Length: 247
Image (cartoon, one colour):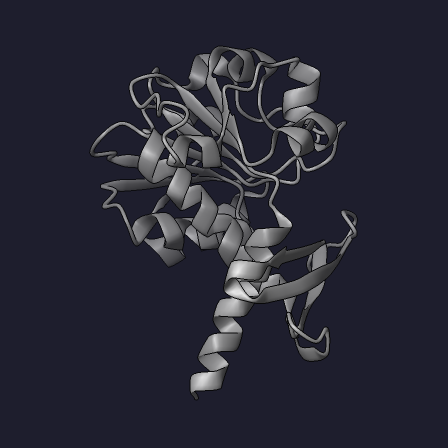
């Protein structure tokens, strides 16, 4: 996943593997190689897993900040892995939730995460998302785990899992009935099973909304489908490199 920003003098590429059958080790593993943008000389190799985890949650936080209704009180998280943790941390850093509700296919994992974040674990996804203002789906499910009828009208959803064209986390009816934002139209139409199989209409890329070219429909049910962009990894790696130069 290469990217280049001449304005920021940032040139790097991420090499990533995805092994969904992994259980005791991460399913995604990566390194990021940073090059000098003027000479092409390799300068640093860094862990890609941490950057991917943090930048994914950061983008979801930006989407949530702009697309959810004012003063969200309840956060629901479907999933209990590293992305669940990073998303709770990122969103809690910009919003004050009165309640954090957790569901995972393995109840023990939901209990562990709930204990870490002062949240509450639930036996079903339906219970977990009831009355939630913000919902995050970060599972490895290939079938929908979030149904339209469970979601409060006007809620905001960050759909982060289901990164393959034949995988779904979200009920197709919910995708079609929500105002759909993506990080990249091209990527969503090629890689996102949630978008492809629902045959959903994409309202805007997140960047278009941030630039004011498309509206933020904060009073409607909104869904941000996250797949990730190479430039997010490169700019995050550049930030790390700049910090290392100061130490």
